[in-house]
Length: 284
Image 1 (spheres, rainbow, N blue to C red):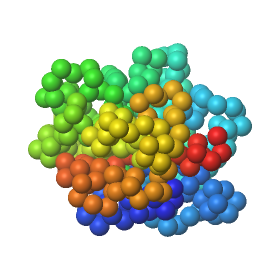
Image 2: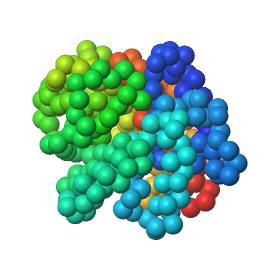
Image 3: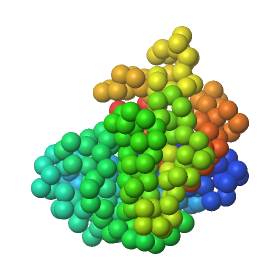
């Protein structure tokens, strides 16, 4: 997966040198042999601009939480760390924010009704009028990949986002079956208060999604062979052999690829979900 991300980044930045790459989870990929004891993998770190992680303070065992936080603490000096925590009790929201801020991470807290990233929180942490031109300048972000389902029209969706002051907005490139256009994305690049901001597109690089444009009706588990393993809890997704050429061609490297669509739509970067696919294919 390290090689996959490096190749994807090289292709993307070859088209747009400022294009931002943020893998989600799999922070251990930042180290040689997946271990902080073996030092950082500089080629991988050079390929990415930040690291997104989910649920590091309220999920999993205390040991796993501690290990993840320790690894991220090592990496925060060189990369921006975006943390999305879920709290089942809204009274924990402030605590979740403070836990990340105290460690130098940027928090986005999903409260009990926002498990699927479908809500825009009413309060923005560290709201500012700054012009945000790089990820390192960001003080807050909105993770809103499920938000399209709450709007009946594309313009109402775009207007809701345009009316916010988030430094970074993370959304899906698609509204329904239609990819957002460059002119539509340009509507979002200025905060309501006048400052510029970054618009990042979600992309699943470790699992194929049956509702995406690339999916063929005849496909199913093991057909093609690179459709490797059922994704527990997500019936419309299948873990892929991400190193296979056919999957790489879907994601990056050519004019018909997913990443090229994101770049053509005017996004500032891509948020790579399921980079930890290597773990679920080999160790789970």
